[in-house]
Length: 285
Ligand SMILES: C[S@@+](CC[C@H](N)C(=O)[O-])C[C@H]1O[C@@H](n2cnc3c(N)ncnc32)[C@H](O)[C@@H]1O
Image (cartoon, rainbow, N blue to C red; front, side, top):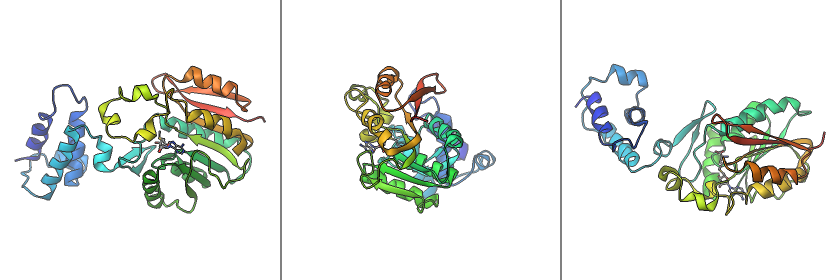
């Protein structure tokens, strides 16, 4: 069998229309299993392949994908903001929308007085946000995560990105208990924000594979957002900022939470689909 036969035969194993990206996905799985680049795939597509470890690995990957498992979990990694992060089923797969939060945090750093900055990331998951900010600012980041299994992945990413000396991984419920108040310049968070009732309606590849604790924010989707907005001012220095990612349907209730909070101003930023996705809130100047 040639590599190209393997490619086309595999495409046919997907049920009609159930995978828009199946060609790309099969290609990615072949490249990973055979340890080749995209270019090598095209150059070697007419080569005969023999039964062996690589082919067995490919079929294992393909069968997992056919059952609905996300590619990122099959490969154990995901690209985010141009960097690679380890992932497994204990952490959320970083999403492109979250890159907006990172981009805004980097832009805002120019407005913050003094260095080094103190940054708190609540619900750090794989550590994607914490690590990018620690690299960019060359500063200390406190990465809080409630799930022990997620913290394991986070620490692996800290070592991989060589920032374990600058990012403190803390197991806690929202705010790190041993930190004094008023010590952070910036708090960032991509919290769980799916309302409980919507969880069942999520795509099976999300609902059945990604950790529920990373997705669901209680009955109304606000159970993690609410205490973050209420308590964040205590943990921020004067002029400190909170950057929060929110769900597509939470603009109105989140606006009300911020209106009653200790922040003096806040603005909503839209994502690529024109949905309000990130809130940036400022403490009094
Ligand atoms: C939406 S995921 C975000 C992961 C990562 N920061 C990202 O943007 O890809 C939310 C994370 O918050 C964590 N989490 C949920 N409730 C928490 C809490 N009360 N305190 C700290 N972390 C929490 C979950 O375990 C999960 O890793």
